[in-house]
Length: 129
Image (cartoon, rainbow, N blue to C red; front, side, top):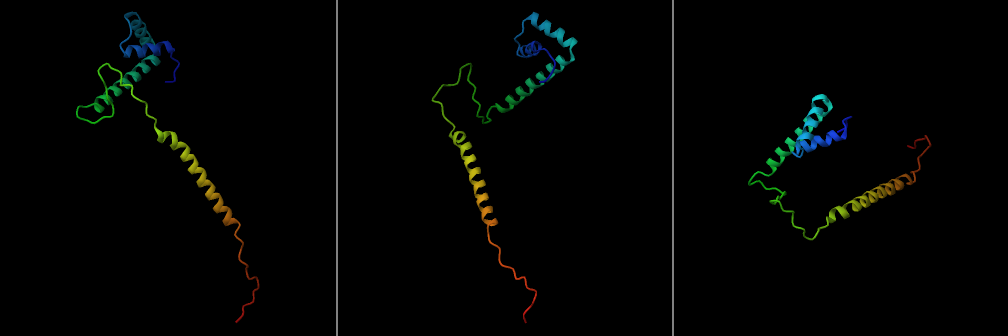
């Protein structure tokens, strides 16, 4: 968020929303929110973002709804063998090669069309009957 708010207060807003401020830091933030409309606006926007994220996760993780998200109870996900997404590795260079090949083909076809000799045109105005 582009603003003139001191980054210290932005950090305090984030920590407050995460419930990580001690009483003294919360009082400092509350004083800043009372006197600074930019800080209040940021707090409101960040709070709205948090609420939207919570609602989105609740919808995505409804019981019985298939989801690619898997949460474990306080455990890190298993660290298996890392898989490489070959479509991402190969896809971009193949797309670039296809674009170059297409451009080359268009150039060659256009070059051939331009070099086609013209048919001789009868310039005499006489008509034979």
